[in-house]
Amino acid sequence: MAAALAAARQGEVTVPDDDTPRGLRLRTVAADERAASRAACDENGRHLIGPTDREAWNRLAGAALALSATLRLPPQQAASSVLNQRLDPRWRDQLMADIAGPP
Image 1 (tube, rainbow, N blue to C red):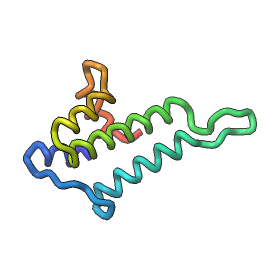
Image 2: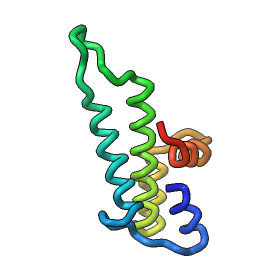
Image 3: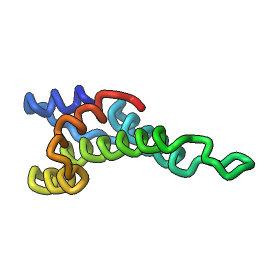
Image 4: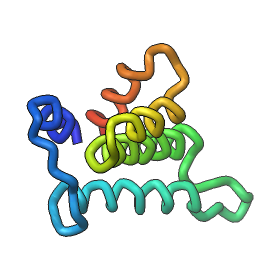
């Protein structure tokens, strides 16, 4: 996903469809996040995936959605989508970290 941002910076914007590696990665991240957020509980009612891991998957999915918006929406709509999710003043650094690193 970081490579997609670098390519977009160079003017090489391609909207990922479902069959491209980037499209598959975006779908996989979304599916993994859904699975992590709906993880089963053990017999004591504790989630099998801890809150830190669930939050990491949630942040990665949010970053993937921001990247997808950047690649397929007009600039003003993409910026609005990204900025509504990122309210921290260090949002750029956080977004890049979320995109670059797996949970």
